[in-house]
Image (tube, rainbow, N blue to C red):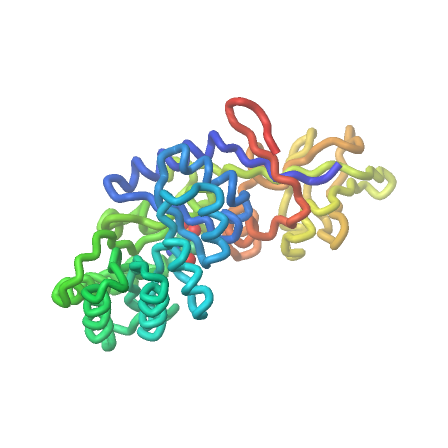
Length: 353
Ligand SMILES: *Cc1c(COP(=O)(O)O)cnc(C)c1O
């Protein structure tokens, strides 16, 4: 028996519905980087598509190829990390929506499209203060002028203007938003007609209507991962869709420990030992050590081999609760699920693997 990550697709549906009710009429882009935050790219994409989602946020061309394979030609797939000429060519060939935050990359995208006899769809990125690539405001006007030329030549279509914000303080985000607004105005003055403006990720999309523009890029909240130190799941109207469960594989009452694993928690930060409790048949028990091969938990009276405990998720702490105990964020916990942990999908029709 091994550990498993149970992904509740009905809860995912509900989170998507809550997100759309909150952010509408803006469009929802579901962010699926990191194997859909380790929930499994293919199943998550197919389910979101079934729920009516048409935009997917994929980090790079490999991630995007997975979305194309799952959903076919009609999905709009936004990538924001295509840097080498081969990645760029791949992005053009796959008909992706390409985030471009660099003048040289813009030239490479146009060249790749020209060579293929295609028109590349691009979203121009302004650096609105985060300094995680993006064109600096002082270089923006030359950048949009050049984009307008390439559009007239038929190499590219400027579908969007976008940026990414820290979501750490409202004041900084407001500053970023005014930089963004100026960049959009400048793009329009250059003759561009971007139809999708997008700036916000989960936190700003939910909390701040003026950040929604035409579309929001939401990862964490779709999976029910709330912000550390932020608004509760209940107030957001979402809930965690994943539960990590692990079998008891040895019980040692002489020293009062139960061993669980293998693979259940070995990816989790060892700083969680002593700082987290798992949910057992007899209630919560403290995790006393997190090791490479197995984890020990305070014993409970009726512990038996094969019994499951919940590490996080429904009936237990959330990934963000655990994260808060050690000063990190919920994604950090979610992304640590070891690859060998089996994923199991639950929905109204039962269980699938
Ligand atoms: C990860 C990411 C998002 C989604 O962020 P969440 O906080 O998980 O919603 C959006 N945009 C970009 C550029 C990202 O890298």
